[in-house]
Image 1: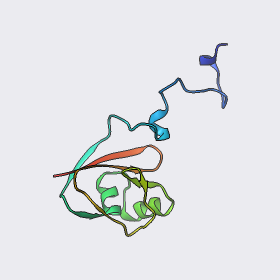
Image 2: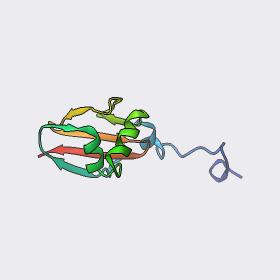
Image 3: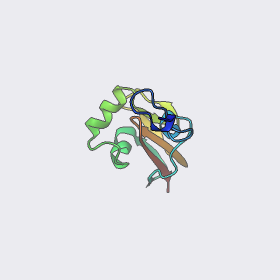
Image 4: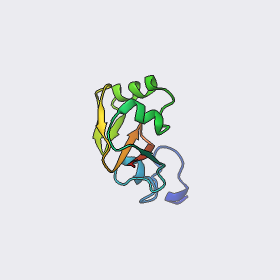
Length: 102
């Protein structure tokens, strides 16, 4: 059995296959959402970007340090973010969205 046929926890992903989930690179197929160029309530943006179903779920993600805005962790559930251009919103380990100002 060669290394590509291994099964179980010792199996390693081929180089480059798992990088989008480790924070090294961003996925290329991120959905983009256009919003007005202004300040926005972050839990509302998370729901708008379909990364959470309700504002309560979005606030729980923030409380559990599961949300980042342009690579910076957000821990304030009442956070307001300034949308001025193109931004990356991440919720959880694998959910990404591109937020673009109109």
